[in-house]
Amino acid sequence: MEQRTEQAAREARDNPAVTGVARAGMAAYGVVYVIVAWLAAQLVLGSPDGPASGQGALEQLRDQPLGAVVLWLVAAGLSGLVLWEACQAVGGHRDQEGAQRWAARGVSAGRGVVFAVLAVLAIRTASGHESSGSGSGGATGRLMALPVGPVIVVLIGLGIACVGVFSIVHAVSDRWRRGLEPEARAGVLGQVVTVLARIGFGARGVAFLVLAGMFVWSAITHDPEKSGGLDQAIVRFRDEPYGPPLMLVVAAGLGCYGVFHVLRAGFLRGN
Image (cartoon, rainbow, N blue to C red; front, top):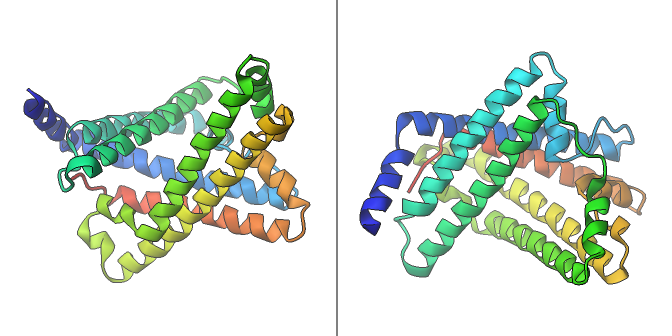
């Protein structure tokens, strides 16, 4: 029964229609990160156009000509990517064995959740829903008011830190190569992809570790306003010595992460 389920998942993943939509979703995911990087750079330079977050990036897309149509297409692509990652989680990663395969399948499931959240945000944004405006501080404040709220906030921070560490490990170990077709790993294209991936995953890891530190510190100090998203982190570090150039480097790295995923979309490979 288990083998039949895995075989069915692989067949669904390799269906040309599913693969095509997944590629579109991967490209859309990359574009979102490119816009986040642009918004982050704007914050560093003191001329913010919107929050440097997934929600902010999607709102920027919506405000462009035919933006709502584009967002619906982004949502469709991300939904296909969710299906593709779900199939990977059930029947993929056959090039690994034992605990490594189970870990890889868990990572695929986690990525599927991330893409699903972005897909829902895209649908809400395309439908005209605005962000609540309460910010992460407001959400953190509600958590902190619970009897075990500080513990929950610390756990959230540690979870974000794990994502950051995982991203940095990806940068230094080149594990991202497993999801690419061979032609994207060789020659000049391979060199370009390698540079983008290493810088991008590294910068994303640093950004997530900064966010994790803010969440943990807010729990320790019982001050929810000290938590926040990437935009709040950038504003706080912008006024520190050497803060602007460091934050611009992080923004550029996030842009590299986005461009890497746009390129990855053309060479997406299951295993």
